[in-house]
Length: 79
Image (cartoon, rainbow, N blue to C red; front, top):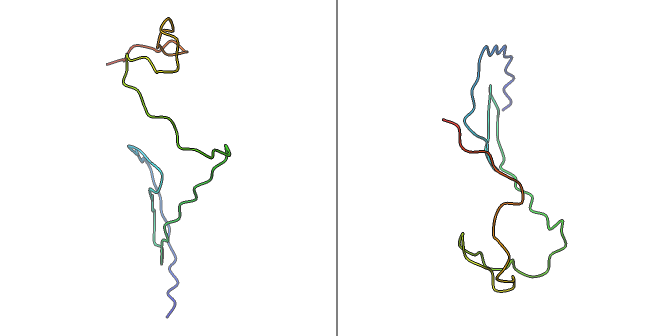
């Protein structure tokens, strides 16, 4: 059985806290929403990523003289 719905939606203000992968924002009616996630290896990587290091620690392959700091200066948080 098919339902045909005619809608008139007026949104004066909408605030969205955050949308992430696999999130659904629905305004109005929909029969079926099928979740889809496409994962692509666009970099052509063939091995797992190296293990993460904790902030302030030096990675084993880095020289000890290298400073671990952001490459771009970051702005202080604003309150």
